[in-house]
Amino acid sequence: MKAELFNQYALHWAGGFLLIYVLVQLLVARHPRFQFLSALQKSLLVKVMAIGSFGLVYVLFQLVVV
Image (tube, rainbow, N blue to C red; front, side, top):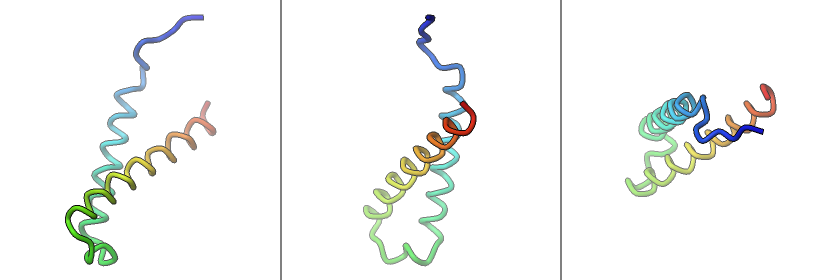
């Protein structure tokens, strides 16, 4: 069994996370539902939503494709 030090799709996953992060950032910045939050709350919300969304995409992708 060959162990890989670096996943061949790691850069794709990193780019996917960056895309999700930017989309969540835009959503929180422009959606009226989040306007009442402070800058710190928005920052934390973006991070939590981006990590959660990416985790969900990763799990679904692993279940469907692999």
